[in-house]
Image (cartoon, helix red, strand yellow):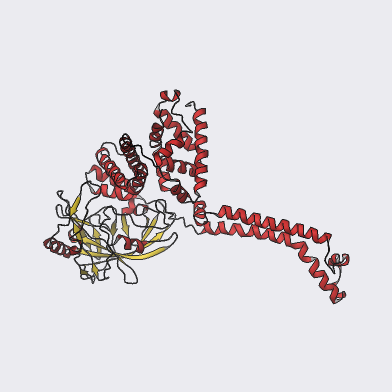
Length: 371
Length: 187
């Protein structure tokens, strides 16, 4: 057998082992190591240092006993059983300085070493939140306001808990106070991968003004759903990146990431095409609003900055999602999505599909009724 | 099976190409990294991943994997190793694979006649048993090095360890594997 064969066999081991290794550890022990990568060495140095100091103290005391300082007397050493108030002032001073500290110092130092270490461990472990709903149940595809779900598949670096706090819908994006902005001109000169998983799928920008108008028209027939969600980084320790924290998944088509700043009242539109049938894809990023009035609907990097959550922290954001009216069902004061809609919708001119799987919001009883 | 894997597999079965996008987004990064460490090139790694996605697209409807992520990693890894073989026919390359090969010499000698008769399946099962015996952390370190081909610095970062501690751990695991394979009669 050649070594190459062994390497190949290492690729055929139990897939559970591979997935476990990719997923990585989220143990408190690892967190400690990450926080204090040299904690072991530091603790050893600390303990050795204290030990040396204590040994030095013992030796020093031994030397001191052999060479008593001036003013030290055997009478002073036997003072604990003596009524100090009956001793003269000069004798009292001599007794307190020469006897008490020398007897108690070593044990005090040992206590200090022992007390210093455990609180570090205890604190770190106690700050690791381990929620009961770590696994996302199958039924979680239907979400209502108030639901909390674990969505580790949204992140490459940890487990994200999402709580839907509120959801409102508007008859149109305009009613929600938003303006349509066409950024297609800014991509005219660019060539980028439309679908990177397909080789040779490089496409030039070919969407015309008519297409933009068509999409604008199409958006008029869509509800604009504004969802407020609370994102919590419940135990993320990056396993695949050097960062600790949660990022949204990297979309494979990331070569168009730009640094545009959008006004909160605008949402972006840009599009690209490929030569395949039914692949003229127009993409709109979801809209993220921050409390400070920032919106990062397009730039991947900016979105990363915005969504970044250190372990154990949470943020509440608002997310705008379009819901085609023909896919929506109104019942009384409620609005239901007949199909799955998602935070990253696509529109395909070929098939008219504007949905993506995974996230479906059941807005029942929590939606606006004044549409 | 995770819910997202189930959905992706259903989409692939329904020939919905968006599944590939999602698959690449979810698991592409670790596959790219593995392939990059084998091939030493971003472009080649991307090609290996694309190839793996293409094969997954064709194979999954007939035989859906139970572990989609591991399946994609294994596919990418195999493709990258094949690509590397064809590349090194003309030019001997450096990088992580030769280093990993050299390290594994401690476990199995390429010159041993006995090994010629070893059934790959039996050996794989034995390695699975060995990995099962290891502590979780040691198992992860070993797999990250020899299955995912991560650099020791990357492994150290993932485990919050120093580089030398990882090398020491790997060395001990290799020796343990050697002993295990001897005891099992493979050497």
